[in-house]
Amino acid sequence: MKLLCALLLLLQAAAPTPRFDANRAWDDLRQIVAIGPRPSGSAAIEATRHYIKTQLAAAGVPVVEQTWEDQTPAGPIRMVNLIATVPGASPDRLIIAGHYDTKRFRDISFVGASDGGSSAAFLLEFARALKGRKNPLTIELVFLDGEEAVVEWQGDDHTYGSRYYVNQAVRNGTARSIKGLILVDMIGARDLRIKRDLNSTRWMTDIIWQTAAGQQLTPSFRAESTMVDDDHVPFLTAGIPSVDLIDLEDYPAWHTALDDLDHVSARSLQIVGDVLLAALPTLESRLTATSR
Image 1: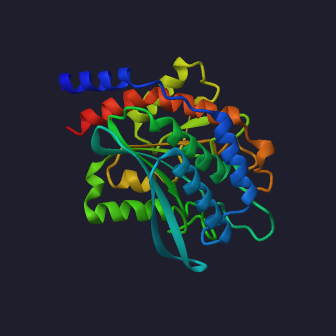
Image 2: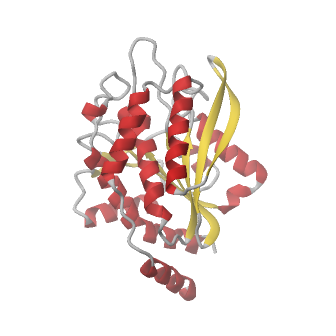
């Protein structure tokens, strides 16, 4: 174990310090929002996938599609998770995920700047930041489809992409190599207030919140607790340590036409990027140790 920890420290010391660039993330968010509402199965979400794949290709990060047809209250819908891989010293995986679809509405144009847009833009820039890093674990950045309910959030009408991803991993035996999940969802609000999710794995939450406190970012990473049903729950059910970073209760534009660029901020994306990059070495060390 001492040798492993020493190796991790050497890998991190030898690598250039990764940097999250909120300006690039903001440009991604602007491009994604300009596509318009992006419900699962729509032409707009296909255009969003094309944009994401183009940006990952430009960054030199390989991406594959995980495609299936799911049964929903509105009938069968084709859905696609995008899985981008940044190699690490170990084939064991840390997943960093978020959704890129938007809730479908008939009466409003819901472009989901924070709810779906911020997580997709964040993952694109995080892929760029991690590309030149010496990663102890292989990192998968998973753009999840079908997080939103097609009709109402009840029964199985939600989290289609994460449930499919986990079910497939369990079925083919690859779930054993997933050591942890960090989920980002709705992280773009101007007045960012992420609460501690009680459904999340506590030690992962503690590491991230302690890192935020060390960076004097407690106004954005709050001490208050909440309990959220989100894309991390299928991973938790499969026994995979998971943490959800989400600003839901304090975002008044949630599921309204006001969830637009005027109500989100590049600064919020920078805060989450800085905290997660700083917390990664401690998280990776703990996840590597628990896998032995």
